[in-house]
Amino acid sequence: MPVHVTIHDVSPAWAREVDVALDLCHEAGIKPSLLVVPDFHGRAPLDQAPAYQERLRSLEADGHEVYLHGYYHRARAWEEHAAAAGTRRGSLTGRVRHLFAQRVVSGGEAEFSDVSREEAEGRLVRGERMLADAGLTVRGFVAPAWSMPRWVLDMLGDRGYGFAEDHLRVYDPANRTSRASVVLNFASRSPGRLFSTVAYCRAARPARRLFPARVAIHPADMRFALLRAETVSLLRWASGDVVARGRDLLS
Image: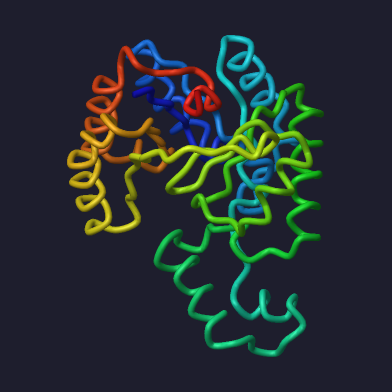
């Protein structure tokens, strides 16, 4: 089955680590897609980084697809979310859901997991504009932490997006089609997560016999020698079956 490789959290905030990940991919003969965050955590706006814009234009011209990856890549605190929803505290179910998405799954970065429709559309519009102003062509959308309500897919389809993904599936929102897919990625927020995700990525490789696979590289991974080595191993495992476009996983 085909494999698609991506680098997440592409931003001036992670410029050095992204370059390390690119070097590993290029050494394996792979041109990963780039998941660009317009303003990472509200402190790294792409429109104020002309040299990095040029870097991304060069990579896109060399065959790297560009995807919009949220806008801030950071979620609001529960109190802010509840206030935006018009309630003082929100329901217990909502609080548990928010806690799971923001603390267990993503470390507070599941930006699109609890936005309103108006907020989601506004961030899509602003993100698309910032990338377009940088001279980049957006080929898809991936929500931070792969977390989003189902209605975001309809919104993406209405806006003409041809590719999106979550933890379990890849999508062509414009044509309302999808396909199951396994995603292999590491987490380095704690030693426990680091070692457990290494074990998972090793154990999950045979699933590629049944489903197309995705290798997702995060810049923070590049700070750890073990994860750099495991990334090289994954890229070698994928070599020969890598597709340059995310949409090719749906073929």
